[in-house]
Length: 322
Image 1 (tube, rainbow, N blue to C red):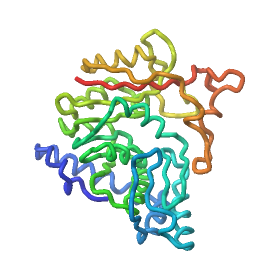
Image 2: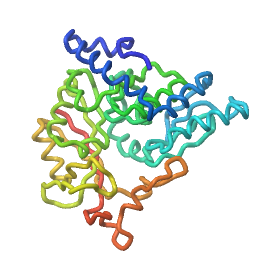
Image 3: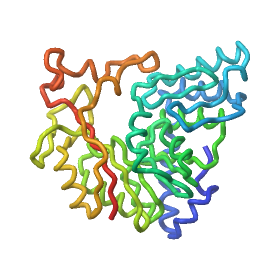
Image 4: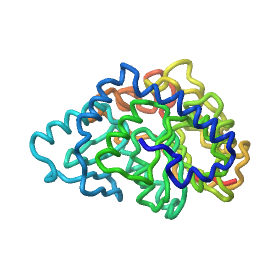
């Protein structure tokens, strides 16, 4: 993966000390790629280094890299093995040289809900927080973004993104193995930030919203997708352990609670986009994600409750500005 120092957006960070701080962080995160547990993923990336797609299509719903006719039978077998090394695919769909990957999440549905409010990202520098394998980054690029920077600390996702980039290099996309907690190191860099499925996984969601504000340019936009719970009171649920089978869930707000978080973080313009129960049709097990998913974590006799007895998840989409 290329260094951000080779791309135009990096020049927006003018503080030499901040640049050095980011460079130091990169040096601490890169060794994760070499950890023994990711040996299969590294081998998968290396096994198809010679394959290059003639084209890429990112106007969705599926991000399409190459066509089936571009590869011979042996190359298709090699590609299939490499792609399956990254099972479960969490974000998608993708079509890679004719190999259709139906991921756990119908990420295109989420994008379609946001799209009427995005309208265009023409010539913008955009951040995708928690970018996973980069699905949304490709969609953002298609919307006209000049540069898209993905923030994702997980080495496995970085290798998945590297595999896709090797098949069709896309210079306008950059991947930083950093988390949302590092976003304040990029002061007033981004025209638009997407924070999708992140807030409820952190112990200080209001603090994160404030950090995101620091990274926005004047009149910049922040798009938020946050899992929450139904209810009218401005409260948040803190599960005792897992929630709908997932660990690392700290605060699940009601819609009014999320709005209060946003206001107390300093944002003054709030436009609601979507608020509805999360559908088991949107998050489910597939061939490319053969795991227990949302349908298995709702009570069979009462799907308004999780298996732990909590209210079933809702999703809240909102666009905010300072």
